[in-house]
Length: 78
Image (cartoon, rainbow, N blue to C red; front, side, top):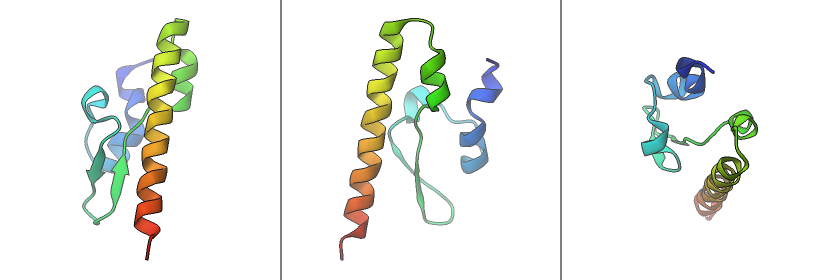
């Protein structure tokens, strides 16, 4: 897959090409005051060539989803 296709969503949201290895799983403040979190696209997980890489990347993806859920829960508290 071409490098430019992997960061399409990040580019659209952030206005720049994100460094996934450095920014994945971190909250990123956006210009409008909201927050985004970068994670892997599910299709990336499915295309990884070896099983060990798939397991590792999926675990990171699940961690990211849990972190987003916790942040949403915390933000919804009165």
